[in-house]
Image: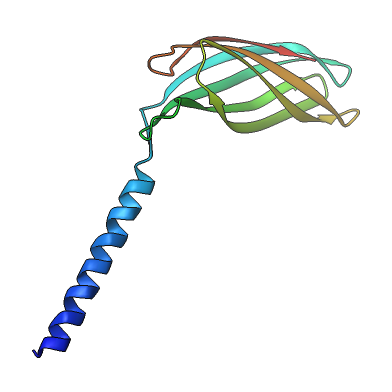
Length: 141
């Protein structure tokens, strides 16, 4: 191989290595710890009917390797929230600042006798070291 070909090959290899390093730096800027999960009951009145069901809350600690404050990824799944003649379900995924407690509201469409909406308010208790959900309560309105 001549000098020009060798020089171009080295430039190409250097460019690929630089691109891979940049991708690792950007991709590694925020590292997520393993998730924790809890299941909590939901009860209340929505759409004119008493409803009950459960929610699964999954939290994942997200550390910022560039020195920023950690966050927590909160995933809430409400499946089969039911009452007489009514049904609702929904899901939300939120990134929240990591704190020992947090309050999250999710608006759901209620299907049934009168199509309406309901708000589920979650009061979360989090471990500020691991981001794990220690407990939660839910109220339905």
